[in-house]
Amino acid sequence: MDEEAAKALNEVLNILHENAELQQSPTIPVETPSSQEHQQEEEPSVIRPDAHKPPIALDLKGSKAKSNTHKGSKRQWFQFLALAVASITLTVIIVLVIMPLFQPVATVTIIPSVTTITTTSTIQVQGRTLSTLTLTQVRTDQTTGTGHQEAQTGHGAVTFYNAAPTVQTVPVGTLLTRRDGTQVVTEQDAVIPAASMPTEGQATISAHAVQVGPAGNIKGGEIYGACCRLNVFVANGPFTGGQNARTFPMVTQSDLDTATRTLQASMTLSTTASLRAELHQGEANTPPTCTTKITSDHKVGEEAIKVSTTLTATCTASAYQTQDVQTQMKAHLTQATQAQLGDGYSMATDPVITVEKSRMQGNLLTLLVKGQAAMAYQFQEQLQRIKQHLAGMSKAQATAWLAHLPGVGSVSIDINGTDTTTLPRDTSAIHCTILYTGQ
Picture (cartoon, rainbow, N blue to C red):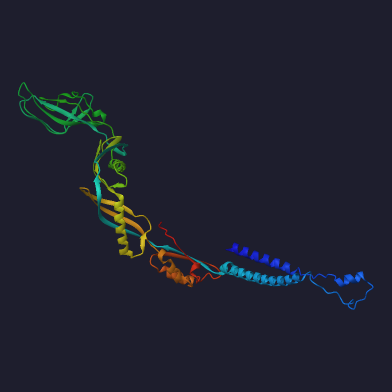
């Protein structure tokens, strides 16, 4: 706009300059000698009565005089036209270029409030059953437990023989000594039946070494001979289990729980990938229903450096068209929004849809679906009415009025011009911007 006005102004200045040059070049009358003067020069001896009259100034021709008069009228008309064009051009420049520089311009930015709407609905869509999956995963981990075992004595059994014709008893706690001095002690009474020759009566009871540690591990038969009383003999079986105090790695419940959680997470990924491989374009699968079995090669508290855990899962699921679910849930979310917030709201973001439960009956799939979406008020259709209401308001009044409109989250107003406290009365100088921060 400024460039066009500048061109017009330059044309006017050129016209005025040309007009000034024409005014500085006046018409000069031309004097031509009359025929009488010419004759006087030729005949100087003849004296005429009008010989002393001054010469008369004449135009070159009578038609040239008329032309000069016509040119003068045309020049005046041209001057008038130039002045008119100059006035119009200056007016255009003032209206289109200069005046807007002093007219305030307001920029109103409205940020709608975003409200999250959540609803859970039961819907029905067409579906199909996917193939049953059976997957097995195994992992082996280092055990983290530490067990401690006190020093242990060797344990075994001793057998008493009775050669007497009557029953004999060896009381609990009887010490028996082998040839190197190692002793064992009985842990219960030994009631020995009477002998029936040639067979001796006998009784076997448990016993343990008195010495703690490996020294109590006695080979069988190292205690042998008469003992305790008349006609009673004893012989030992092997004693084992005698050992010093020690610490050892063992399986803890945490080891098994950690392995189980890791396997379950991995199994979920594997199941999801396997089910997706069976989907057609535009389909999604319901949450799979799985039965799982977990086993390990060691129990909690057992001594082991490593423990292996096995997870086996058998899963079933169904497939459905995602568009069918999205269409129905958008309708449910819109209804929930109208019930909670009223009219004029729409989705600022795509809804988040989660299928929580499913039930398949034939080809009809019933789903329990949770939908969530950010809703924002739509101001586009009201912008002209808003600008008309704001025209001429003070900045503080406009801000307060806008803040009370439904769906307004925050407002900012910027005014450029000589008066930065009042919005223009011309609605074309008010620019409204709607900024949806949720998008």
